Amino acid sequence: MTAERPQVEAAAWPHAGTSTDPASTIVIVGAGQAGGWAAQTLRSEGFAGRVVLIGDEVHPPHERPPLSKAVLSGAADPESTRLMKPEAFDALAVQWRPGVQVHRIDRAAKQVLLSDGAAQPYDKLILCTGGRARRLAVPGADQVPLHTLRTIEDAQALAPALRPGRSVVVVGGGWIGLEVAATARQQGAEVVVVETQSRLCERTVPAEVSAYLLALHRAQGVRVLLGAGVRGFARAADSRSEVLLADRSALACDSIVLGVGLVPNDELARAAGLACEGGVLVDAQCRTSDPHILAAGDVAVAPNPWAGRSLRLESWQNAQEQGMAAARSALGQAVDYQPLPWFWSDQYGMNLQIYGMPTPAHRVVQRGDPAIGSFVLFYLAGDVVQAAVGANAARDLRFARRLIEQRKPVDAERLADLNTPMAKL
Image (tube, rainbow, N blue to C red; front, side, top):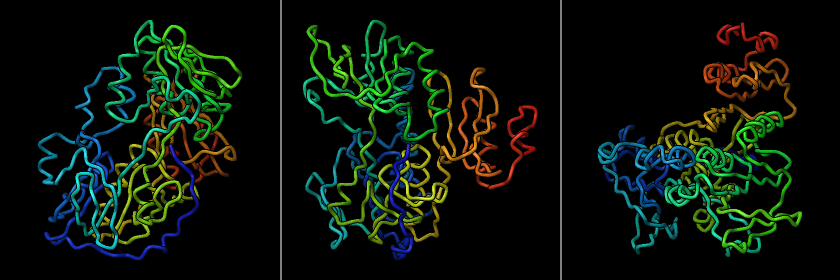
């Protein structure tokens, strides 16, 4: 969901506006959620110059959340994940370069060098390079098929393995791992989740939320192994695969899925000499250490006052909104992008949402009951709500967000009372 990084000082980047002159060229590297919204925003804000959208995937800009759910289960076609209809995308009049990689940024010449040998000049450059699925450097990793889930092709390759009579081991008990586990179980596969930490989603949620997720998956018949390290992979005698655990035991299965995090694609920025620390460092205007280059989405590390530190936010909302903010900043508009972190996940028909950054130091107030399937956990510092986590409680969570943003003191007893409307707090 997020990656913590050192605080970034906004004052480190000088402002440099971009004219909306038709002769100007803005190049966007990365044609995913952030890149697609950046392109759309440039046009909606009246930019009449040239927009070049370069993506190493062959698909037009699309959303990734459905890949682990509706697309993976076969309930939705990959075409349904497009950010916009074909005619709307065509109306943007962008120069789209699918299946092309940027090999190098030449900052002195203000151009990017492409894998097809071309050199593309820019007046402003927006990096939306996202990330890639993390791999495990353990023995046997190159000896057995290991699935990840990041692209449309990944979902299409994994989907046939999720059916009754098949067994799947998901390595990683974070969000992507749990969503894949839920989809696989709903498709009838036998599922084991292997997590090296002591609880699920330990990096991103407090213990009580981890416990809720654990109970949810176990109730669906998923075997969850906590504190279980993976020492390697091997071929089983029956041509299946084995996950070799640190305790010397082994799990035989038909398919293995790695859900062990995201690696930001910041190599291009690093090679160009841009400031990077676990991603590309940007300020609240989405500007990098080069005033002509901006960054947005999963690759960008930005200051976040809600967390009190800089974060790389891995979320659908951030990719969209930061992509839009970067486009406006590239046009010279005043931008102050410091969003309240928001994350959501759908598993077994349960919708979980997280606002803010809950920590063990917060006082927890519970509204509703996990046993009846709908609840919100409020995380308070004093009498002020700092964060909220809820399941199947979208309406209450909308009010929770308002309480967090307003920093309004609340009465904890009334907050917990289901008979007190959230609108009255």
